[in-house]
Length: 115
Length: 113
Image (cartoon, rainbow over all chains, first blue to last red; front, top):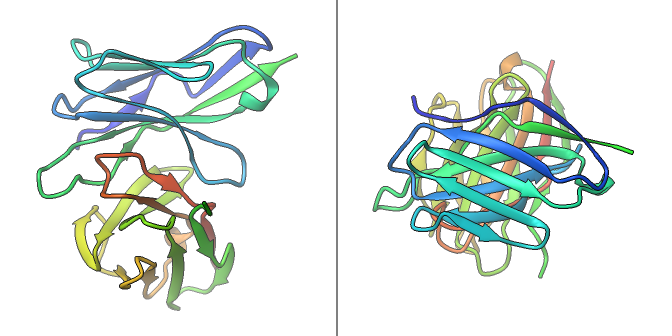
């Protein structure tokens, strides 16, 4: 079946640098995309979302970019901090009209912050 | 506002037993979804409940079931446990469903021996 995937299982960045985490999705009909952060021993924490009628959305230190032409989603984290260390998941939702199906998650990218 | 809560946080069972996990959504949220997280398969959607009705279901065997109560609290049940059912079970709630932001609880870690 179709699923959301991530390009890299691990990403190591220097503290203070910007991080870019990428995600490729295969379902062109998906209309809602979300980034979650999961720290060890915790459930996924919502970071930012974007709908298919947008190509960019900004939050506090984070930006999500959506390129529907190549079915690509990215999460940019500015000035990475030690607290950003976690596994990051992208997820997509296909609204089926009768209520959206559950989220389909990518496999996750482990972001490691080096001092 | 309190977040999603799940009980118990940790559970050890043996093969063949059954287990019931509980989830209390964020106040006012009517949709509750359940996910299974394993190292091999990642996060996978189990099912979603809205107004006490199962609205969507993932690709899991019938041993996995759930229900939702009138106060939106939800339970999921796994019967005849198998070793492969060992996982982190996550509950997420949202106002209306997966077409909007879902907020996750801390999960229940289930170990099947």
